[in-house]
Image (cartoon, rainbow, N blue to C red; front, side):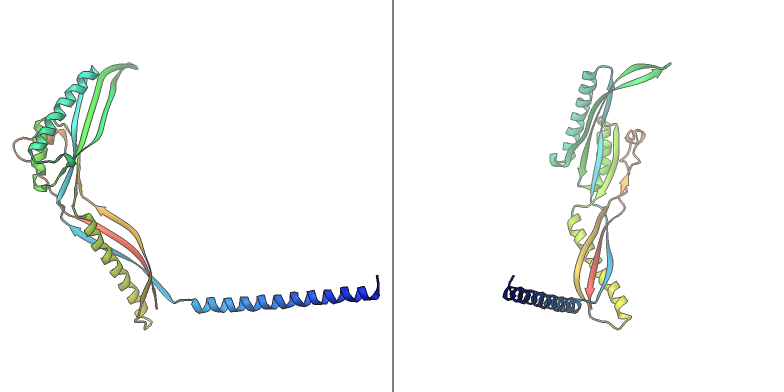
Length: 248
């Protein structure tokens, strides 16, 4: 290798090292600038959770009722059940219950057995058919129960009380929850002399409708025909919860 070639290679190495050092300097400078930018974007925030509750008197009752029949022949158990349910449906129509307010929620057929001296003895077939009935005239709930009992309904699984406009009422509860969160944040920041807050994030945490249930109806109660079954609706709660962050 000639002296000229050696000098050329050495010169190229020097240029490469210089470029590498210069690039490294630029990267460090860039990192420093980015770090400064991030520090400038930091915000002072305070977070608070809020809850809103709206209490209302229910205006709708949803009753789960039906018929249970038993027979050693499956076809007879089914036909007896169908006849009684048809009478109940007709009675509900007379009481002003619309088709869209009646929904089947269970229909089952299964055999039943007794045990005697470790021996399984076939008893017969049980057929159960239950429907959910929405009673929009809530004061007529007791009258509806008595009427269907007279037509053969021997199962009442419970009554749920609710309201028609749950969406609007939940919106009211949501507003109360946001206001509650803001009031909490103001109390915390006012201690440090801060009086201006700007919301930056709002998160809906949970929602809930809390209807009241009455499961106290038995076959004995359903047999009472002398007067309308007493129904007490009470009140229900609609709740909303939020998490809010504020900048100050």
